[in-house]
Length: 143
Ligand SMILES: [Zn+2]
Image (cartoon, rainbow, N blue to C red; front, side, top):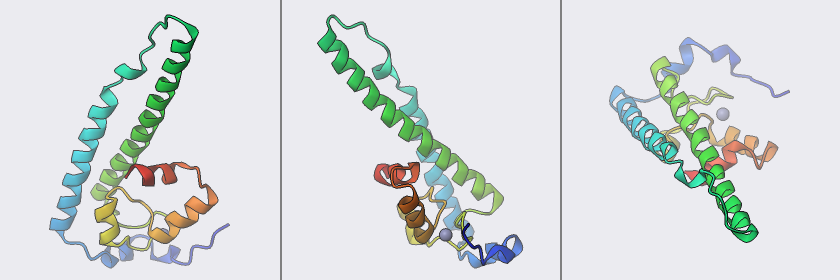
């Protein structure tokens, strides 16, 4: 199992480590809310995966390929939406901008690029090495 040398720092100390003003937090909240809205709109458009009766087998094959592509991007958006909502929860809890694994502050530069990031770069890379085809890798591509 991984070691967690910073476990002692959980709770009161870690929020003091984040050099983030109220204004900055408000900006991220707005970015995340906009993203959540955009994702919910995107997820609302499910027409392309409605089942269409194909005239022949070739059409059916093509349709099923298109459907599976649509489903993939739907999965991605669903996962992203979950991350965005988790980030908003963390904003409310005052835990936003703190790595979920090591509890180090996530640099603001990273949050600007990926406002729903829940891991610092080091932990994210470890996660991707452990699970290269996992959801975090997909999310990075989507962002
Ligand atoms: Zn970390």
